[in-house]
Length: 90
Image (cartoon, rainbow, N blue to C red; front, side, top):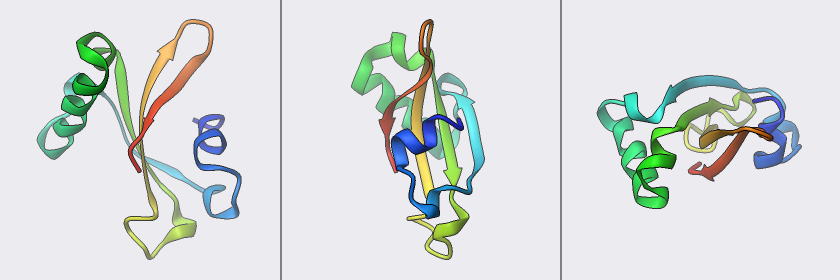
C-alpha cells in the first residue's frame, strides 16, 4: 500500500499519514460494501471482480471532513507488478 498511496492520491502532506480501515477480497464483502463488488463486476466482469480487493483508507490530515478523509480503491495483484489499483472510488 505504501507505493500505491502517492501514485493514486499524490504527495501532498494531507496524504502522508493514513490507515487502512477495510481490506477485503471483493467476493466476501457484505452489507452496503457488497455494492462495490457489484460495481467491479459491472466495470470489469466476474473474473477481475473475483480477483480484486476493496481497500478503504482514512487520511487523518483531512479530518474532520469525513468524506474528504476517506479513500476507496479497487486493487488487483498482477504477476509482474504486484498490487495495482484499477479504480479509485474516493
